[in-house]
Length: 177
View 1 (cartoon, one colour):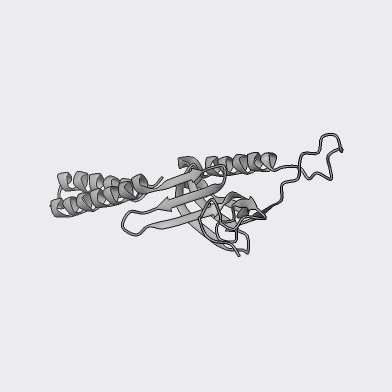
View 2: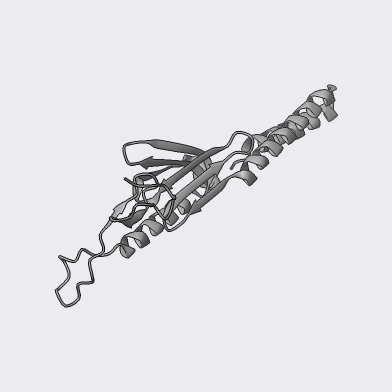
């Protein structure tokens, strides 16, 4: 999946080494290919080990990279769509491209992600759980079971649910007007 270029270069190194045993002296080429294959493998391993994907009850967090860090942190309720694109090789080896579409049409694409269908399933499950936790409108409930009305709104800075009367957001700590 992620290490495919390194594996292909390693296979090419073995092939050149075998050809070199049969006749022409291709040892420098085989050595160069081996060094290149190791370089690709190390680079892809660093990307793989420094990538983080998390789905919480409130957010979807994606962090990729070590030196050049790419981060997406989106509120679960602000995700409109989560697309998965897998070619034949991706289906066979279990990797693909994830496209997260937020409200307003913003799109973030992440390539060569392991188990993208599982990631989408986790995001959908968290969204469904958040939807189930959302309180039902008192107008829908019978009068005997209607809870006390708690007026809430979204914080304009972090989009967390806060009381209408709040002057300070308890999540991000910013003052509200």
